Image 1 (tube, rainbow, N blue to C red):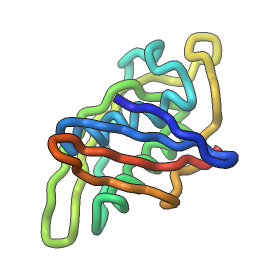
Image 2 (tube, helix red, strand yellow):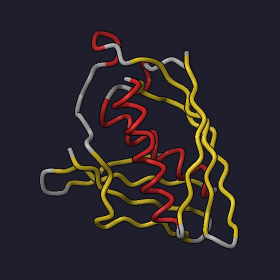
Image 3 (cartoon, rainbow, N blue to C red):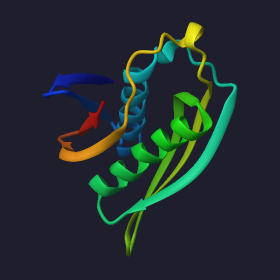
Image 4 (cartoon, rainbow, N blue to C red):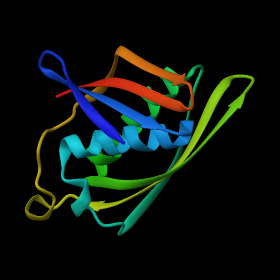
Amino acid sequence: MFEYFETTADMGVIAKGKSLEDAFKEAAKGLFHIMVDIDKVDKKEKIEFEVSGENLEELLYNFLNELIFYSDVENLVFSDFNIKIEKDNNGYKLKCIAYGEKINKEKHNIKEEVKAVTYHKMEVKKEEDMWIIKYIVDL
């Protein structure tokens, strides 16, 4: 599940999941739903990548900005994500397989252009049995 919150000139996302991986998956879905109608994005192509971070906020920042990079450079939008997160001595590693397709203006209902994810007000925390992620994108 993801939802949005208002900020000045940008867009905020709140993503929740029972596991850390599910919360990151919802954070990615929230990111792409700002750009397009993700319900119309088919799983025709997949990309695989790995990012790391010293803490969960840096991991989230690197993960979402890597997805934006693929969107900008490869003209891809994604609707589903297979994510595995591991903790090691240097912090965290995230392996992702993202499923989507090339952007199609007629099919995907283009909404906003996301320039980047920011650290401003970014949070990754666990409350009881739910992981909660908050972040803001620069439009």
